[in-house]
Length: 186
Image 1 (cartoon, rainbow, N blue to C red):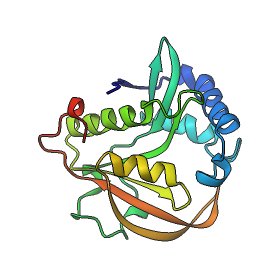
Image 2 (cartoon, one colour; image 1 turned 60 degrees about the vertical axis):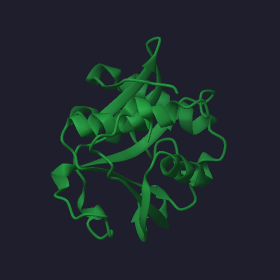
Image 3 (cartoon, rainbow, N blue to C red; image 1 turned 90 degrees about the vertical axis):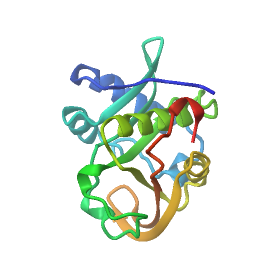
Image 4 (cartoon, rainbow, N blue to C red; image 1 turned 135 degrees about the vertical axis):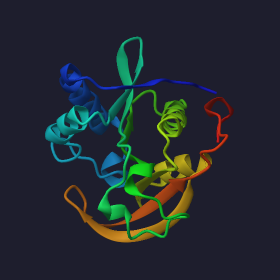
C-alpha cells in the first residue's frame, strides 16, 4: 500500500500549485465531464491563494514535485447542514475534502487513496469526529475511490456552483475515526 505525507502549502508555492491544477485540467481525460473543472474557472488562482492563506491547502510531493493536492479545511460549511449525516456534529468537528487532484500520469497508482488515508489521519490527529465531502453525481471514479476507503453515501442534493451550474452532488462521510490506523487502510 502506498503511503504519503501531506504538508501545508506555503504562500511562495502558489504559482507551482496553479501550474499543478492547470496540468490536471489539461491532461486528465474526461475531467470536463466528471469534475467539471475548467482552467481559470475552477479551481481559480484566487481560490487557491485563499486556501493557502487560510492554511487549508495540502500538498503531496515526491522528489520535491507536487503530485497531489487538496483543499482540506478542518470545518464544514453551511452548505453541508442539509444532509442527513450519520451524526449531527458541530462544524468545527468535521474536516471536509475539496478539489482533490493527482498529477496526470500518476493517476491510478494509489496516490489519491494514500492522500485520503493521510487526510483521515490528519483529521483524527486534530480531534475531528468525521471527514465529509461532496462530488458530482457524474464523477464515478471519485465515488468509487471514496467508497473503497470506507466513506458512506449520505445523500444527494441538486445545487448550484459557479463552475457547474445546477447539478446533482453526492455527499459522503467517513466516521470510523476511533482506532483507525492509516497504515491498515480503511
